[in-house]
Each structure stands twice: as structure tokens, then as C-alpha cells.
Image: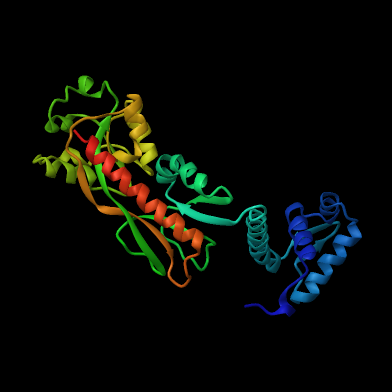
Length: 307
């Protein structure tokens, strides 16, 4: 994986990064609570190891050399990754397990997080860390135990467990229909429509499903995430097509209303993904089983509640 002869002392890398940031050995010494001589010795040892000057000495100043600028990019990334890895492993203290999850931002905030206390109640000594990821990634390069994926059941190097299919419904603020004189699906032609940028055909598909042919399906602003779309709709900017399970709170509080009880089944579904080349830990297996059960119960509840 690595050759020991090419691994410099961590202190030398920290000194190099600090001196490069300040373009000053003396200011680096102040920040790191070392002497200027100690910084100079660490930089000199690092330059001897790599075989090229990392700084050009210009009168009383030091300026990164071309090699130094290239090296700095990798050193900063490596130090950042090492810091993150250390922080993660510190999270194991006092626990019986840690799960690092990559989640879709809106799904994680609106659906998963409110339900996690139920899982943690049954597993009180477990720590769950979550980070936002929108696109599939390589599990070999990102230190995640599992991820939430939406779309087709395709993820290179991943094993997918189906959670739920996706249905979107037209929603808007409570005064929308009166403001725009919307009484039937066709009336939405003259109203502002909000779009989720990764679902560019959603409104066209919905209009087709209700038997309306219109060019208006492509008109309106686009937003990167469903949370943005739903907030824009609640603020009165227009009608939005969103998965109902992601806006249940807004619907229950009356910030949003379903305009027409005509949901559209999309071609996407939600999945839990884990690396295919690693066996499931007992903790990940328990989490997967719990998550599938939660998703099933949620689908059943929404089906019962549907007008």
C-alpha cells in the first residue's frame, strides 16, 4: 500500500503546510509554538527527502517553488483526511459500534433523522454519523458503511436493498389555488411551476398522466434539492411535484396542500447500498432490517391516508 521510505514525519508536513500558508517560517513558528530554526530544519529535512526545493528563498522571504505548490495540494488533502480519520475513530470510544452513512440531503433531514431515535433506542450504544452525498461514489475511496441512493438499482461496487418506490404529488401553499384560479389539472398551465433539477420531465410526465398536453410543463425555476422545491412552494412561489413522504410535516402543519389526488409513480426508487466486497457487520444488518421495516410501514401509512 505504501513504501516507508516515502513517508515523511507528520511534523514536517504540518510545518510545510503552515509555512506555505503564511509564506513565512517565522509566522509558522509562532502558530506551531516552535522556534524558527526548528521550522527551517523540518523543511530542510523534507526537501532532502523529496529531492527538490519546496521553497525559493527570495531575499528575506520564502516563496513556494513550482514543486512546492504541487506538493502542497496533496499534503493539505492528506492532512485533512488524516484528521477526519482520527476524528472518526475517536467516535468509537464508549460505543459498541459506529455506522458512517452517506445520505441524500432531503431524505436524511426530512425522513431518516426523525426516525433514528427509534433505532438508537433499541441500540443505545451505537453511534451513527451522516454526511450528505447526492451522486454514487466509490466505497473504496470514501469511508462509508452504507449509502442511501435514489434512482435506478445501479451502483458500481454496491449491493442494493430496496426501500420504497417513489411517487410525487402536486403541492402548493394553501392560497395557491385561489390566487391562480386552479380548479382542475389543466388550470396549472397558467400557474408558476417549480422543478427539481434532476427530474426535468416530472411535470410533463404528470400532465401526460392526467391527459393534458401543454408546453407549460417545461416553464419555471429549477432547484437542486427537494427541500428547496418544497420550501419555495410553501413560500408561495408556485406548485411543485415532490414525494409526499418528504413533505408530511408541511402537509400536517398546513404549510402545503395537495392540489389534486393524482400521484405520479416515477421511474426512481430509494435503496440502501453497501459495499459488495465487504461482509455486513451485525450492526449494519440490524440497521438494514430496521430501515426496510420503517420504509414498509411508511408506505402502508401513506397508502391508507391517500384521498
